[in-house]
Image (cartoon, rainbow, N blue to C red; front, side):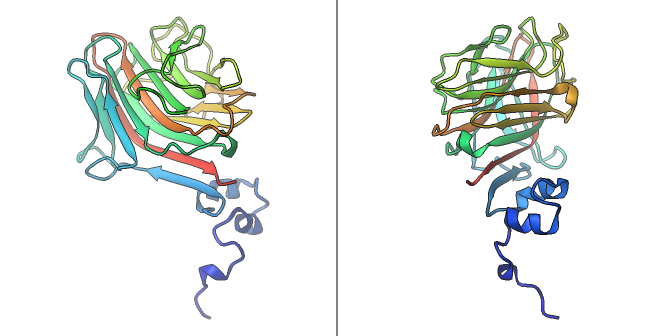
Length: 268
């Protein structure tokens, strides 16, 4: 029998092809294989196993004392990035990594999954964000998380997972705002006064942020106890990009290590 030919299938590498041998497009197997349906989905997985950071990404820092931007490691297991906020104990103790492509649209349901860890979880600010282009990539999108307030960073449409140990609510929150919407927030876990909830020092966690025109979803470590949903989202027709930001909230540096980042969206 002759070897199969990829191009002989109807719509090869598509959702239709997946649905033809699974129990429909919403089957668990089809969901698992969706990254292979290149005709219908954009999907990029960055494992950072190169000697230098993939050129699709830009790193930045706010210039504080003893700060170091995210950089690729040639010694950490299976490819990792690491950076330190330094010891400035102010807004200059910030490190960020942002995607160069500003071409996503909330209408196409962009999403991000990042696996990261912090060496200390007592005093830090962390956000994983989708937004239109910020004025500064090394500055926070939000000023206040107890009563969510948007920072003046040139953004109109923002959806973020935020943890800020300087706030009364130190648990993770899902916060979103659109050009035509007011700021809306949802706790991702029961509000506590424990710094770093729900992260543990030196332990990897996965943060998932799924956006849409009329929905926002976030999850940490795949736990039902650490997720949130909002029935609002960012406006469509606004060009979006993802970013991860870490800021020290004390004079003790916070080292952040990123294992991988996955990005995706629908093509139509």
